[in-house]
Length: 137
Image (cartoon, rainbow, N blue to C red):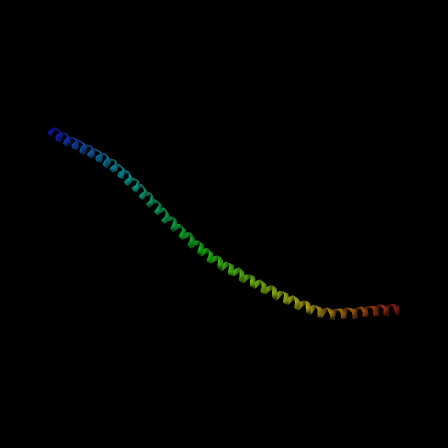
């Protein structure tokens, strides 16, 4: 019966040895996986740093462009206001010209009546002169 005890101990030792070998292999595979995972994380971190730097530069450029656009928009607003004022001035000038033309037209109408009378009297005088010349010949 002693041999059974030695056999059992040997079987337990063999099982323990197999367990240790499998655990060691599992740990080696796990170690390799962790090494690859660390390398992937380092690579991803490098890419994130590169992208963050590019995003920072892009934001800086976009802020510069936005500032430039705002300055140009303010300048354009001033130009638009100036054009509006010029339009108002032109409207006022047109209104004044229309009023002046209407005034001249009204004065010309008054003067036209006087000139018309003067022309009629001149025609009457010319007709009388012609008649007088014909009679005195």
